[in-house]
Amino acid sequence: MVTNDNLKKAKAVGINHVALEVGDIEEALSFYGSFISFEIESVSETAAFIYFGDQFINFTRGRNQRPDVDRHFGIAVDDKELVRSSLQKKGVKLLDGPFLDFLDPWGNRVEITTYVNIQYTKPDHILKGMGLGHLTKSEDALAELNAKNMGPAS
Image (cartoon, rainbow, N blue to C red):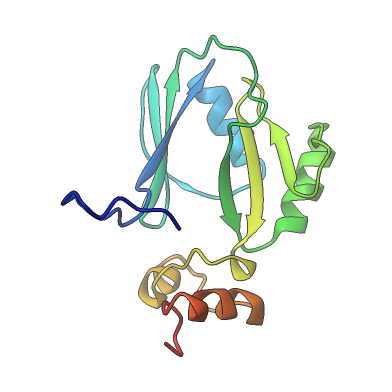
């Protein structure tokens, strides 16, 4: 890992939210709500804030650029195959490659990943509050975390 330790700087703690440009707020709520559950914090004609526990997506109206090719964001879910099935039933074209990627109706590239198989971790009290207290990390994810001194065995 390359760092520049000569300068004093703040340490990043995590990503609080993603702001996504969409063509229509209600359509975005309907589209994303067809394959993942979330809480709507607020909604207007020009913006909506949807929460997944302690993180959120801010939908903003006004996307006008070309569809994403490589730029994307990932959503960790408890059941990736359920998302795949839901997207296929909606007729959403899944992108080629090793991941579950697709373009939303406005060209935002989304990657769906399984929470238990990745390093990203929510504290137990947040998972419990989200009704996901039953989720446990895979051995591979735990090994990756432990190798960085960030796992429960560290």
